[in-house]
Length: 256
Ligand code: ZN
Ligand code: FE
Image 1 (tube, rainbow, N blue to C red):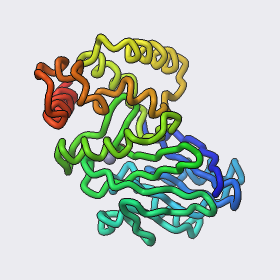
Image 2 (spheres, rainbow, N blue to C red):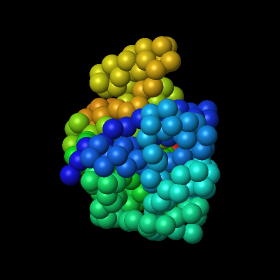
Image 3 (cartoon, rainbow, N blue to C red):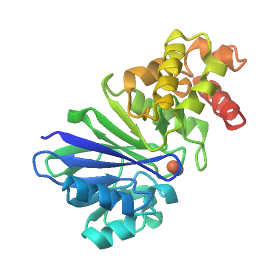
């Protein structure tokens, strides 16, 4: 067992790519390289040698750098078994419950369909770090391009069970607009109001709002709170079925 260090690289308009380094062996994984050059440059600056790419799903802003990074480093590409045909250069296929080891650092893999049908997340439990791509965002969740509300609610349910301290390394800086929406359906939530102020202050200084923690998401993310009466009221439902509430919240966000 071993811990990881995480380096966050903002690229394109609002994507985050992560370098993950196993302290024990020095092996380095790149999570969802949208592009290659800034990633290779940062690794060089740090003196880190990229050995793996860890993809969460097939979208271009998550796999766009795969082949160039592989060509430059000879690294091994890891990705979702359920989407093997859409991950450029995939060599190691992983799925729900698999343990992937980056050197001595173990990550548990979760299948989290909804945004895409083959989306996965990587949880480095010993380091309290979750890499969840476009499934769970800070105060939001991914659009349902290839899945149903039922699937996405179940996927988020797997993640929601993780420990409070889990840091949520999602793939986009969408937090400020996510919070604007969240306030429209859960405006009476004091934890959300407080988060809104903290996030505005961070963004005013040009700082990232990612990672957040699972404790914070459970308290403020409307997509993790579809089983709360306040959220049902927020979308005009009487309560009851969390999937119906989740679907209504997601639909409201799509047109917000
Ligand atoms: Zn995506
Ligand atoms: Fe994305």
